[in-house]
Amino acid sequence: MSRYGLLHRNGSSFLGARPLRILQPSGQPELPTQLPTPSWLNASAYNPSLAAVPPSLQTELRCPRCAYVATLRVDWATGCTGELLKRLRRKIATNPLGLRKRTLVLLVDARFSLVASGWLQDAEPAAWARDTPPPPLHDRRMLDAAASVYDARLHVSPDAQLWLAGLRAGPKGTEDVTGLAPLHLRRRGTTLAAWQRPAEILTVTRGSKCAGRSFAFFSGDDAAARAGELRYFSWLAPTAVVCALPPPPIAGGARPQPRVAFDNNDGRLERLLDELRGRGSCRVQAHTRMKQPRETSAKRCRLSLNGVLLRVPEWGGALLGVGHLHRGHREWLDGAKVNGGPNGVTFGGHHYTHFWFKAAAAPPHELLAVSSEFCLGAARAGGPDCEAVQYLAGLARAPGSDRLVLSFGVNDCSHRLLATDLGAVGDDLRPL
Image (cartoon, rainbow, N blue to C red; front, side, top):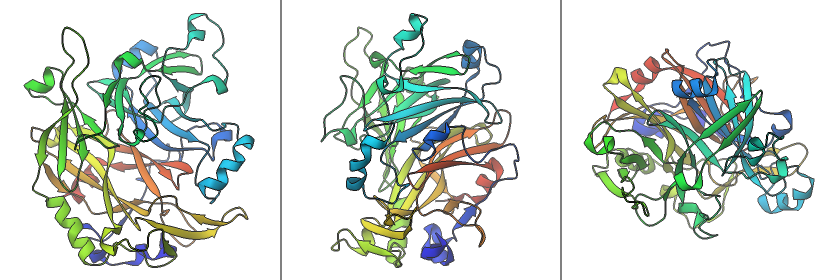
């Protein structure tokens, strides 16, 4: 980010008029910088989610050292080459993935050493039932899915597109279709079978404040939640919206669509964003050109939700989540030549910064506090810096520890890991 000037701005350019922080690793030498992905996927795997393995799954897998499950988006169309999508399509034939998109599932130990890996599918692999080798790569499906723990059980939630047999909504409907399903795992040596059953998938379709992407699911502890009601944050701004998905009818049949359970329509977070827009802080002046010149400068800040959420017992059960801003909405960001190719160009927005938020444990789960904006530090010759495109896709608490492990995508191309402390996060939160 330093070459574009954002790191050198004063506090008035950021949420709450507080300076941007570069979040640095908390000095944990055993934490690697990346997940143990195959080398041939180094330029195709990004936006990793991360979830702690529940004790019941450790028992089921007979794997007491299994600490985390990670999922990564594996994609032929990445930002690694700095080429536009239309140019990349011409190179599909030379890519081992072809046109498909997939989700890679990793099972790792507490030091993030690989235990087992496999591809997420929408049914239990038949090969396992026949006691024969798994099918080859080109026969497998890809589901762009994020892992999370809900109700003490691992789940996966496709982000934006539900690539499932019989559930894909079509070209114009995929952006507003999301689901949640239990994640089933079976391990044989270092080979992992990972699947979800279509009959178990809870779908959320387009149409209301409950539609969108990157939902943050969580378990409640009130009567409705204990009765099986599924809850999730769908939006943070202009209002913080919590939706509820009722349990399926006892007699069977279609599950009801979600409803807005709580709309915290006080607009406190949106007011911070409006103040930011009013100070002219949404445009990164250098190295940009407009995709749509008529777009007003005030609209070039987007505030969105990341699909990660943790309940913190030390905070009375309050919820800790992550949101992000990206500046330069509807702008191209011109960059340096990459690998001798054309100028690097972001596909959709740039200068991503993140912030923590704290939400109340009990309904209506209103937003209580937010942190300063931060980016995820990378070592550079000229000092600490951050990439212009970062997306925090995973958040897990190390078992028996205050350490938070963050996994994030870099430039829609690769990924990294970083650890911080829960206490440091709490110290940075300010009441709304």
